[in-house]
Amino acid sequence: MKHKKLFTLIAILTVSAMLLAACGGSGSGQSSGFVEGGSTFHTPTEPPTEEPTEAPAVAEVGSEEHPIKVLFVPSVNIDFLVSSGDAIEAALSEATGLYFEVSVPTSYAATIEEMCASPTDTIGFIPAMGYALANQLCGVEPGLASARYGWNVYWGQILVRRDSGIETLEDLNGKTWGYGDPTSTSGYLVPSALFADLGIVPGDHKETGGHNQSALAVYNGEVDFGTTFFSPPLLPEGTWAFGDEPDIPEDLVPECAVNEDDRLYCGGYRVLDARSSIRAEAPDIIQQVKILAITPEIPNDTMSFSPEFPADLRQLIMDAIVAYVGSDACAETLCSEDHYNWTGAAPIFDENFDGIRIMMEQQGVTLENIQ
Image (cartoon, rainbow, N blue to C red):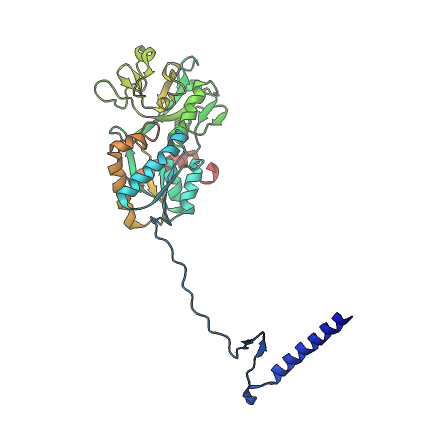
């Protein structure tokens, strides 16, 4: 009961003090505040003027706080692409003084989407159709195109098992088709155009995830035929020319094996097409899988820039890539046949992809139907 009375008394005294403070106007010369616990709290007569706040500083592209994104499409050995990332980052940083961050998105489409979602700071190593789609979607621009052993073009190839009984392109009618990704130029677009021109209608379609996986699917009998990239073999003498047989001479097939330098050779011929990429899993790949045919030529894959990438950094980075491709260090990463097998690089321009755009239009390939 005593506690209740004490509480009531404190409440009355507090209210009284507040009323007295309110009555003390400026005319009395008294402050308009009240005292509590020895501190004076003043009620301001005017709202305080807010101090202007500066916008947070935006880190420059290529700084440690804002590294440049470098994306590789998952077209070949993904583990090797990922493991090469640190070495490529270090080489580019040393050459340019910039910071980079290498990654491998889950698909071709994811790579394109990332380039458009990060328009100021992204570089993509993407194939011809991937570039055409990215350019259409958000204005991605080309920088460099690869060269491989002097070739600035490459081809698609159609692989079948040697014991499949498939001997002509017409034999592919109704057969199960394995391809890496629907946005792959050599694995899907160009073979689709070839089949349409010849009136060939494959049966079931199986998306394998990459060139390596397509070659392995043929080897394992999971599909009747697969479409992958074709790079000409290195010959013991002279240079392969378009119109020559794309495959290893039949009499050399039994000799095909991986040598002590981890290269796939058949006699004096060195295999560089997609079959070589699975030589570890399938060392007898040439004995089991043959090239049925190759497609018309295709512009080589690109190093492209997101649409708002700083212009002053582009040439610096392109010069660094060209120099890196010419170095011994590149043989362990980008220039390895387990990576993209670049042996050179040169500028390429948007008009170089007009033929791909025509082919896409003929095949009804759009941004919507490749998602």
